[in-house]
Image (cartoon, rainbow, N blue to C red; front, side):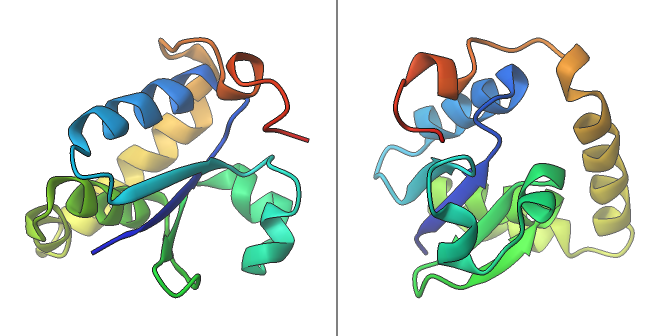
Length: 127
């Protein structure tokens, strides 16, 4: 499984999470793109509001497949080369729990520890 994870490149916590994903992705199965990259919303048929609310998993065909915790599980599954994270996510009750936790993190991400946001670190990659 391969794909693209769209993330908030102006968020230090999001960039830190992206960097962690890149470290476990030893076979380079996951491309990461800040949603602020010019043309990204139009390319995938998503709105800026959808992209600002949650990460998105784009499958190999370029189709938006999932958002929020489910997207994170797709990305982790691809990075690790196993479907275990996705299978765990789909267990009864786990989806609800992970989505609730994702919403809390998303709403508080500016208060969580991060790093230099991608858009500051990689000038010219964000609009």
